[in-house]
Image (cartoon, rainbow, N blue to C red; front, side, top):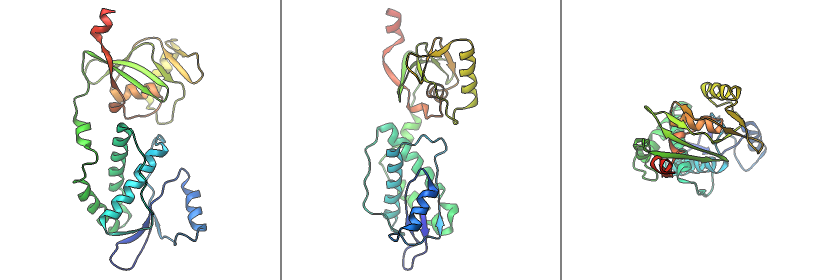
Length: 248
């Protein structure tokens, strides 16, 4: 967000953008005569480098929309163009957007006032019911959960507490992102050493040869993908149960 003072009834003038390389993007704005000079830059980043382009675009457009609806800011951006997102990605994007609002306050007092106004308006926004998704009862003991994402595939069952048992036969990512929690990486290393996690027929994938207990749904998803995830929304009910497996 590029911010500059403005005369009149508005708190400030702002341009909202997205970029993988912020420095290059700022230099481009400096060279362009289309955009006036800004005095402040507010940068909100994703910590795990997992944000796809369509999700980033959605968050950008939501911020523009919220600033326009607040009627407190002169927004330099043009018309909105929201991408179509999967339901799970939609929820993630909305959560990131609402967290981003909290980061506007420290920019300057007027930004804090704008953020508070937007937050008040967002309480009446029924676009996504985040509380419903957070509060749902998810884990059941008599069903099998399936994970499919970006080429990974795994089945798991709920064990004690919040833990998940990832079943043998899972196809998991070989590459380990820097966001992967240390205990997941250590577990992968132990399984490799025991030859319980071996290379699959295709490059970039590993095959799990034994059942593995993980500490949570998120931990199980992290283990499978090789990076930090939002696992509570990635495990879906499979179309068969433990009773079906026993019958076989």
